[in-house]
Length: 296
Ligand SMILES: [Zn+2]
Image (tube, rainbow, N blue to C red):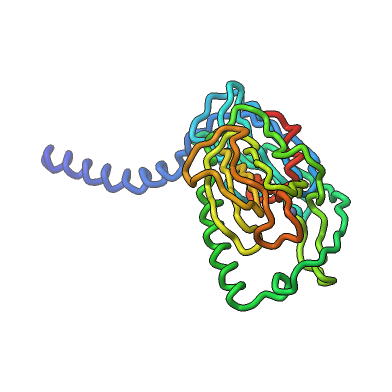
């Protein structure tokens, strides 16, 4: 064999014998190890229909964070030490446990808070209202369904990545509470619903101040709630003012705490003039009073 032929043969054998080995070696290369991030898991109890503010410390410098509580995107913002968020437990719950999970570019979904829901002893309330509001006509059902769709859009557009407020939330009126949050309601002897807000006495057309700084997310006349204003405060927190006789603000405006959103009244499904104040946090209507003592 000539010297050149020998070299060529060696090259062919070498290339043939190395290709399969190369593939095996590539398969065996382990993925680069993920940076270790210490996330502490906190265990908390929460009543159904209540809210909790959480300040969660994160030692490592991470970006692109995402937060899910009870399976849905939850608002939060960054603080010097980590993140701040408000999370609520639904009034109606089938399982008494849920968690909040964090994810980022450095780690996958990891639980950071485990909640156990404790049932709160809510009461029952009996009300008489005009029959047309209990047995709904088809046109009223159609109207209500349309309104429900519109409101779904309002809540889906929630500002989740920042707070528009810098002060603690305030109760809108200091008058007597005429109906608590969470009572189950029996309309004209028919079990109908539960009370998703707090009713305040407001017999005369009383000026209604905004609970905290926020963006006017909705104004309109709703079948059940009458003339209504909804404020988006950011971080997934909304407040709602219902049964008004007049609306003073416009959609899209950013309004400060204390700004008069309208005047109290008796519009919609209401047995007497009053203010219905609703507070929605992380997708649940909650007891607004439980937000007031959480601080910011
Ligand atoms: Zn009410």
